Length: 214
Image (tube, rainbow, N blue to C red; front, side):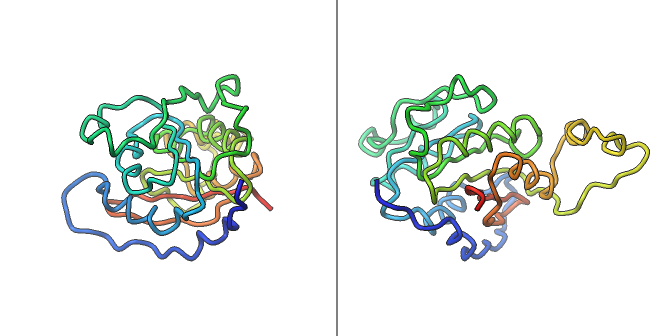
């Protein structure tokens, strides 16, 4: 397989400027603009995990050199002519929290792993599963992208009412219902992954990029 560029090249991607509009989430075009900046010609295999609102039917026609494997069968595919979906494989019903469902025959084979499930930025267990899975399946130099509501960059307060104060940090994360960026980065480090870049999107959303640490 062709050697990939170091994942650190993602750091050079400038954030997008906010767009006018009343939609609750960024448009598919905004997301496509981000991926066009770093899906390189040598990228060959991209896996989606976690379910959620898949982006693959919108990305695949623009990157015909990439073989996409979605997380689930989606109705959105019906919006496109079959000729534009020729590079989308049958879905892999993968549970990030259950290694028994991971396609380990493809260990370290994927150039990128995409996750658009909102739980990835809210649940410590789910985020940890996604990081663990990406560590096992990403090719050296590949990246994991997490799409969702923009997390706070502040450390959560620690006080007598915070379960983290008594040493149960994971419980504190779950109780709040959302993760801060420092917490997401800590979970990544637990699974030997590291934040290497991000793109802020319209409507308070973001795409975070992670790669193998070190």
